[in-house]
Amino acid sequence: MKTKTRLFLLLVFLLSIFSTEAKIKNDLQEMNLNSKVKAITEFSYKAQDKFGETVKGEKKRESSYNFDFVIIFNENGNITEKNSYESDGTLNQKENYKYNDKGNIIEYNWYNADGSLKMRYLYVYNEKGEVVAKNWCNSDGSLNAKFILKYDDKGNNIEYSWYNSDGNLFLKYISKYDINGNEIVQDVYNSSGILTSKTINTFDERGNRIEKNYLEFENNWNFNISKSYDNNNNIISESRNENKTVNFNYTYKYIYDINNNWISKVDYQNGVLPEFIIERNIEYYK
Image 1 (cartoon, rainbow, N blue to C red):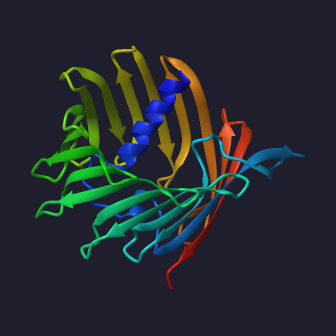
Image 2 (cartoon, helix red, strand yellow; image 1 turned 60 degrees about the vertical axis):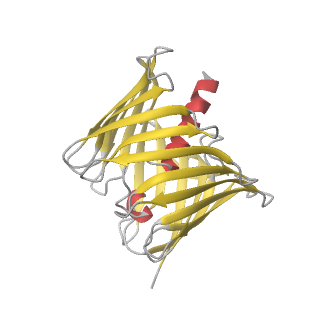
């Protein structure tokens, strides 16, 4: 199960870079940040309940896949640099982003802690400003994979094909959207054209995803994630069920700054026990 979870998280990471939706928001909007944020620093601590008060314990993240980080934004609201750190403060990885004069990302670089390049992504646009191809390159510059994207007349990415370096198809994603441009169905096909998985999303009237159902047919694996949000569109409760068994149930409480960006979040397991305290320091452009 750990191998399956790691593979799924890898695919989630890649799709976070190669989103199947046309990017019409900047990174601040994607991260639900208000005003002109210049930089954000985030640290996580193990929560402790002392005499009925929740206080910070040791620095710790909820899993080995999560890191403390520092993100720097340009004045267009897009990320230019992200540094990820282990809980002991050592650098784990570094990422940077380059944009053209239209504000569109053209290059993404992922570096190891020692400064060596891990991988690079290069973006190709059409005359409408839509990403039509993305090249995943190895550290030596050789091609690892190529992604080809197709859109409908509303600018929604309806087809997303993942090719190996030899030009053979690996996976194909087919997406359907509602009238608000929210991706409500995503089907994934393998190189033989067989449907391998399906994701069904439900959104509220503000465009927040309140439910995600994932079905993997070959291994008969499925999970459901349900979320609810506060008036600032931040998640206040979240539950996950895998193969109809409850895996986790969390609630979240926030403290906000004057721009309605949260600067402190407490994660509660099963709505009762405080588990993590996450703190943010947010710097704004003047």
